Image (cartoon, rainbow, N blue to C red):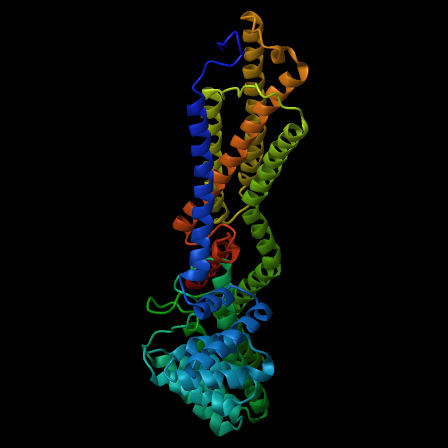
Length: 521
């Protein structure tokens, strides 16, 4: 480093240093503004207020979403007298029990041709014991396009529950037979969701599974009613009639598995209820075999054993579901732990040096030492590595399994932090030492060069500039990561309900395993 002997000032392009410093600060501000403005515009400006609130409520828990949707429906009613049916239906999904049916009735008046709304409303009516109204809703869903066999199974369930007398059970069984012989696909309605939100995350999965559980629980309840009736008819010893009922129920249980290519992809609640129905029917057959001393069927007993085993596997998975969900949620939080660790360290480093300089004496002739070009290049490479490291997390935690590689990534991120701090200290010290050596070598005449406090202030000034470079580089890195993640994954990394967590792949693998074992039997 060459100095001017008279003043002790480094021979360098001071104006260029200032321009570079301003350009860097403007870049940091631009990235921070861009990432914040994009999120704000998408969250609050892309849609009108009601649509924004509706979009938000879909990702929240029932108690959190209820007041938001009530406000949306009230606001839309005041504005246009007739609120959109979608908002009213969403409110009905989360409404308190004493208001659910009236809200569904309001939604149906606004959209009487919606198959999914009719099925949802019918299932709610069934759960509250309004079987006649539920049957009417299911019948209306069955006559609306598209062609779907599911409303007929639901209508049969409501018919069996509304009039438990034998003649009405016969009508329900006849409706079952027509549904079993139909070539229409089994289509399960999708839950309410916004088109702008991805459908591979935990939020959509949970809504979908709650809906499917409600639908297939209704059908399952009708099977239990049939079996109770058959138990009462044992005294009459009408084996042929009992066998006819059980055959229809067994065919329905196979149809509910959704094995046809035109059916909706089977989901876990659907499979669970279908397997339970089939097991109940086969066990009922076995009880009749023992009761009337009929010939046994080894294939049926083997299938009972298989169904029992599959349902036990499902129970184990359901018991472990909360633990799995928590584990995957912790994995999603790992990059934010790493960012927070960097942010706290760099911020403390920056503000401590700034505070020290604020309260230390400043010489008017004190120079600003130039930053090392090599230091800038190495720090840039460090932040590039950190950006790539952050980008790896969403791809990895979207898969199932333990993925122990996540924790080495966390360790690598911390190691990168310590390396950057070491580089800052190293280049600050070497630049400072070169300046002092040059001052001694060229016999600088300025008195301030020999003052110890001024020399320390020069070193702290370098540290402050390098720590500012660290903090600004971190802001740029995180801002770009948020923007790129939104483009690639359709959601920001902090929107955990919209991102795949690995639980979805666990469920998919379990469904595939169950379907393979059933088809191979």
